[in-house]
Image (cartoon, rainbow, N blue to C red; front, side):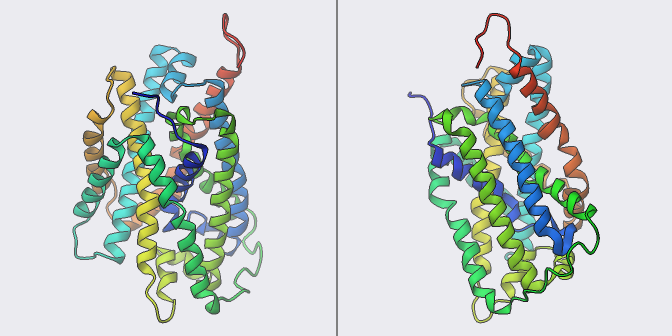
Length: 358
């Protein structure tokens, strides 16, 4: 069997799809209200820096996964313990996105269907995709992810006549603090979550392009997030946006004469599916490395099943889900997204005896 490889375009599409993830239905910067555009720009810049950090770690440790890097740089025992924590983090993240998907579909499209059924069926399809290999996932991303910005554009053009372009005023009414808090939240969700790609970066066929790919995908999400926010705030206003559950869904309901709500469902299926797939793949691959198992597909079904159970159990209701995402997740993620990666970068920059400088 030849070595698994994906192109820079495929990695860009996977990263972009991952970043879109749940952000196509959630509004991580809603706390900044009509100043959220500033939070998006600041969070996007910080997020690009985080993604550059992950790419730099990968380039300093060529052909190695996150587990390899942790065990080599921190020692086998400590590195293995930290790897287990990352496995939990990837599983937890997949479960959260599954719950986002289930809440949205059961709220807007299939209110009579049990959430466990919706989430379980979606997970079963994703297991098939994951087991087909990372190259297949890359080709699917290349084919489907371009649909996401196209849908965003269609919705924007459909609702432009209802826009109130004064909705951004007044500027900085509540000061800079809400903007900074929202920007930090955006850094951790979704940019910092791309730390999972440290299990995938090794597959890029041209490692010299890695930094450009991650920065381009961060820029694409920042631009798209800005467009989505402007679309929603011009139509709904910041006060209604801050109180709404699923803002993009509410926006589509205001489009006269046509039902574009299924387009939001399609976006979530594509982007959420890619994000969950990457997380489950990363968890399965990492666990296989620790356990000495050659075939990661032996674990994907069990991991996905656990994710489904965890996703149903983890929140009591949709309000609990939003509170966790806004108030707990950014701080819970700091060790995984910032502290450990910065430590890995410093350890990777330190030349080991008997090794050549990367």
